[in-house]
Amino acid sequence: MNLEAIYHRPRGNWAYAYDTATLHIRLRSKKDDLSEAILIHGDKYAWERTVSKTVMHKLPSDERFDYWQAEVRPTLRRTKYAFELRSGGEALFYEEKGFREDEPADPHKMFDFPFLNAADVHTPPAWVKEAVFYQIFPERFANGDCSNDPEGTEPWGGKPTPKNFFGGDLQGVIDHLDHLQELGVNAIYFNPLFQATTNHKYDTSDYLKVDAHFGDNELLKKLVSACHERGIRVMLDAVFNHSGKEFEPFKDVREKGKDSRYADWFHVMEWPIAVKDGFPSYETFGFEPLMPKLNTENPEVKQYLLDVAKYWIEEAGIDGWRLDVANEVDMQFWRDFRRTVKAANPDAYILGEMFHDALPWLAGDQFDAVMNYPFTDLVVDYAAKGIIGADRFASKLGELFASYPDQANAVAFNLLGSHDTERLLTLCGGSKERMKLASLLQFVFPGAPCIYYGDEVGLDGAGDPDCRKCMEWDVDKQDRELFRHFQQLIAVRKEHRALRDGTLEFMHAAENGSLLVVQRQDEQDHFLIAVNPGEEPARIELDVKQMKWQEMLGEAELDAAGGKLVLELEPCGFALLRANAAFNAFGFGVGEQL
Image (cartoon, rainbow, N blue to C red; front, side, top):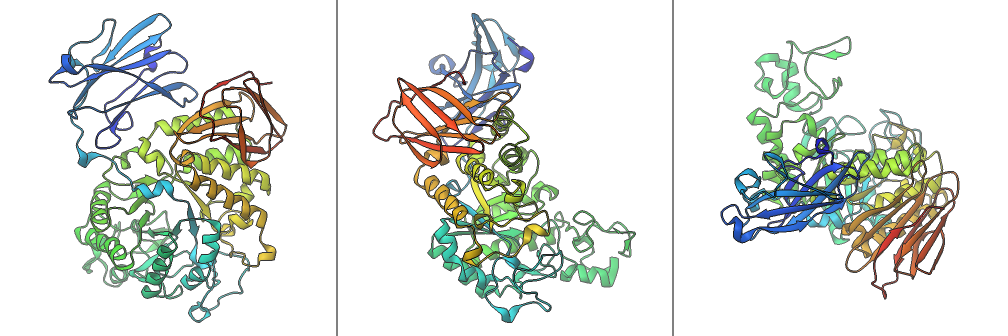
């Protein structure tokens, strides 16, 4: 038994309140080292009368470690616990003070979850697990009102540059809500809508005013209302790390210098403020002079921004905020932000932009979830580019899922492309088959999938600004086969809870190969997802109890007989299979790959 690999800590992703009655407790061990892990638990004030044992189940593993999890419902909300570890004929016990050979009996030496306080439970909005998002870059989605076009607006569909305009606006979104409803999405994430000087609007000049080139505040209210009538939620972009150079307080600082009443609203390193050799004398987003960093520790700045967050929830009825450059803003601000937003709308979704491990922000006091860029990178590398194999993909996903509490994984924002990245079709080398395969994976793993506008009709594009092309509205130029694929993905996910919230198991992940088989199931449904992003056909034989299968998506050769299911997939092939609902004899074992 490898003791160095065994790890537990009674907080964070290792021991947390899943809901007001349930604790999730996890343990790490060396991969394939333990045959069994058992949680010994009870109340610290009545140990002998309450002690019991719960067999832990194994979560998806990574390259080096297995992860074990137990769910317990402590009657009095207090839990002391230790672990019984088994490997072959060897047994060992693990408590807070270390390892021991005899079963522990003194709860004072064990791990402690002192009390399950309801106020500490991380409870993201339930609706997000049901959501399929659609990201809209407003300037490039649709021009519905030419009267508000910026000076020099170019004809729709031209080549995007960092500075040009094509006239996209909120009326254009309203005019095309039928498209979104036909597609099946039920949530929109908008890039910034507020007054700014650029086409991307991340340089806010007025946080309480919709950009005049997009419309006005009343039009935004009309849009939100129209979306809600169709069952579509609306999430806006909160750019609170920095403002724009035309933000009135910053203009005052530029004019009056350190005598400005707003001097402490920003981080000025040297007076007077200036830009020398490309480096501003004030802190900014990156080194962008257009975007001075706000001092969110200043009480006036904090109150101003919190009032903005509350205003748009109450005034327009929005359903959430996506937080730009969230990791560069102080955590105390985000704690106050959460209190403000949840007081205005307890069901609002708070989403942080993160590119790295985000556990410190997901304790229930700041964000509901984060943009799941590690998931993005894995799907792109495995399915779109084919540069990692199935075993590496499954292993790194196992590591990712173990990094966060289950409720945070369930509402993670799973994207495969955005205004900041190459478009998915381009990442796939122009292969629609790879794109279909990648999007299938996006829709069958935990988290809320997001489609970047135009991906569903075949828009391509390299990085910024090419990924910000105008939406294609000529039906004859749209890829309607791709559209139907996304339609079907959304419909199947919406119809079957198992694909949103069921158990997850990697049934097969080929070593030095591409074939992956994933199982998701709940008490109603049983699904197999098989994908082969490789350049050669793949075949696998699975031991099954369930013999009747319905192919929901994809194309695979399958044969079920004699307790075996044989799957054959062409290169870049995939299949989403559902067990016949009339049969409930769930059970699997992976046979030898042929």
